Amino acid sequence: MALKPIMIPTPAASVAEFMGIDPRELENAFICEEWSAELATGLVRLGPQAAALHDIASIRCGIMDLIERYEPTDWKKVLLALEEAATIATTFNFATTIRPGPGLYRPVFCFGRSYTEDGTSGAIHATFAIARLCRETASASRGPLN
Image (cartoon, rainbow, N blue to C red; front, side, top):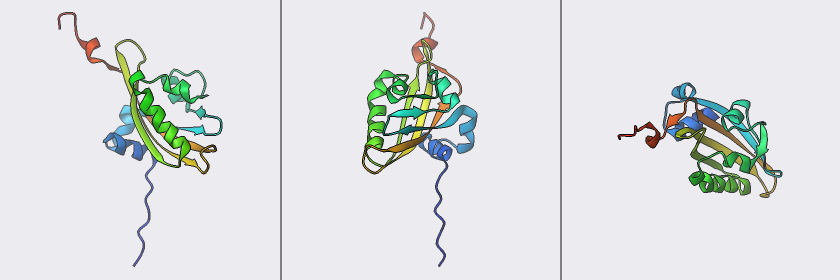
């Protein structure tokens, strides 16, 4: 009996599965870009598009510089996901939004994996899927009479 090959999903396929959409639709609606973090230093290395959409001037930043760009009500869950990934080798995911301006939001999805042996060294490798278009919040889309 032949062994079946183990299929490891690509980062984009993992993000699409997490989001519940077809991987072919992912690239049309989202900018997908990989990022990494060095656990010993806490430095994050973003791709150029992810840095621009997070409104971060450099492709290198601290983890809190990244988290501060997200919806404040999501800070705790994102930080907890990344803290767990920094202490044990695991997979993780989170969904949040970036607020580029009043009444606007841009959905952000992330799927990643961490590698660590002692909780102080290792790395996080992940993929962002960031919506190409901003959305309006419900209150921003209503007129003064609604």
